[in-house]
Length: 96
View 1 (cartoon, one colour):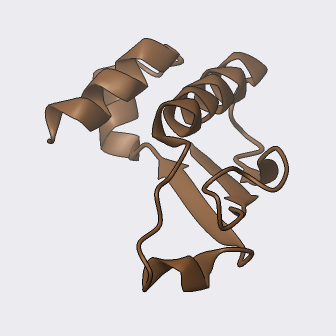
View 2 (cartoon, helix red, strand yellow):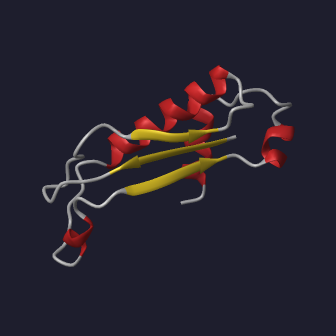
């Protein structure tokens, strides 16, 4: 499963507009795509308002694309079940 979004920030650290989904795996069930969308939306809400330093202010207004991806190996371990958004998020935080 892959899910890609694009968004941009203003200089004050807020998003210019809601994130735009640019790609999601077509073979994935709708429930899986919804779980990825919810997980990505929740992650962005936790990360915004960004505080840009002087050097990073150059990224303001430029599009940023992020791809959330789950490998086929991970999906086989799940028995091809759609992962819950909380499971996706907990896997991401476990690596910190």
